[in-house]
Image 1: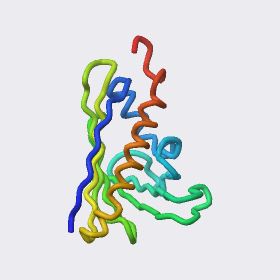
Image 2: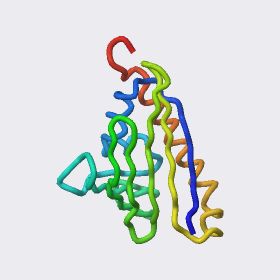
Image 3: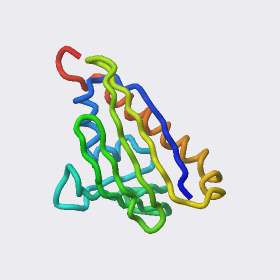
Length: 151
């Protein structure tokens, strides 16, 4: 069954600055809660890029957690990126979409469609929602002061 989760946060930077920060896959390790992210393909951006993210108690050691393998399926800089979750446990799609508010602010829309039994999804939803919300808030805070001159 398909289940969805969507969260939006306001980022204190231009859409181009936000895009550059989001598509720097490895730097997501700095703001994704308990997660280590790395690129596993030869290409680092665009359709076909493959990424893995391990979320767990000690992400750097891949200790007690879940591996999430993804492949970029849509790429529309600086507006959107869609990934297909291809792992053994996590299946579905993820979408990052940026919406310019003005030259100094951008909305970051994060959404996931998770293929899982409804009961399992509902059981994990509070933790999943909280983890993503905390991560996106950390990302927004990390961007303060990283804008281009004049921002």
